[in-house]
Image 1 (cartoon, one colour):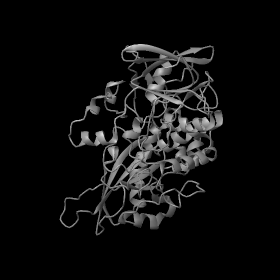
Image 2 (cartoon, one colour):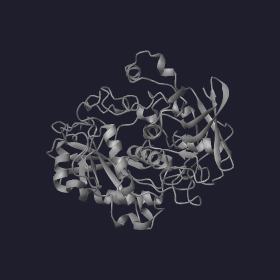
Image 3 (cartoon, helix red, strand yellow):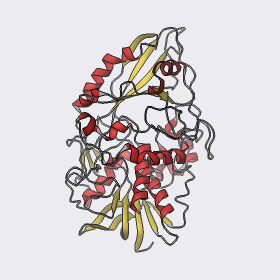
Image 4 (cartoon, one colour):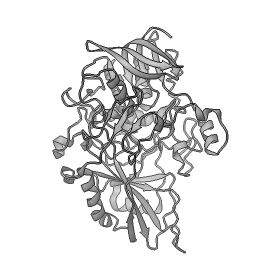
Length: 477
């Protein structure tokens, strides 16, 4: 290991990998890059062994996520994966774009803050990520899109066909990184709903990505390196401090990029004495609950992936001045209705609501310097008003289906997305980083990932955080 590098990157998940992909395209052959990964490679094949109950020495290499931080609200979960590829190893592959309005909440609805970046600026990077991931998606979408998805859409179920006929491009086959046909060494989706570790390796991950990032000779990848802090001096991030094999290490870099998740990016900055008082603040995610719809004389069969469709009928509009947007996900997992002759006469919609950043939800440092504390009080009133409104409106939205009854389940304890804590803003008074993901106070320090989100769209964050990484590296070097 050298004493100094042109670039030091922390983490190997989506944010880091797409940042590196673009950075390596723009830099010369003599560039030296150090990548520090806390965990280790846990190959897909070995993960499958573990799921089948077979022994694998890889199972104990990486710590369980819950042991890495202190959760002050046990009713709120924050799942993620430690190890090479980060949460690409446990995500479900849902990749809808944000809507243009998601970036302009203040301008359009008088709520929260506008992002310092627009949909139009991010559009070409959305396209680039979709091509690199091999996304399956429809020709018509509710968000502007001038290019086709690289793979054809997944097939609709019988319920989806009825809904699409009624609502057109407000009800679409979900754009997804679960392949609709074999591509780049990945198989087609098997519709088993075992997406956290895909049995047939159909879902895009960093391990199967074929992006060539970590094979690049300019990169030195170090496993088992837990970053604790940075040396911040006179407005510059000088060095990275980390622990490996029980020993403290320090290495310098011209540019440093934090690509851990939103909890640990904030923790590293707080441990470093970050001067921005908003670092760690505004932790959050979306809120989701299931609406189980019982149908008369309509069997819900077919469909070629786990989440077969997205519905936008309760998403955009003037109602967002008072209550949150809601995105519908049609769940195509095998549910059986326990009534003779009606086994498949039902459909489950996951109703996902945006939330607003709140200061009472935050990451802080406690007694253990390597174990941040996560504080989460509740979802906003803005979100809970939308939940109540959805329950009033959903029977009307589903009027095109032969609905017998709708049963609403309790909200989930997590949507498995960690957002906020290093929010993007126009200036240091209202956020931590700028539109290029560069820290307002330390201009050689990038803070990547979904911690950058200014507000919390109901859409899944992975496509957007990956596009932001491409944008940051493209516009900054």
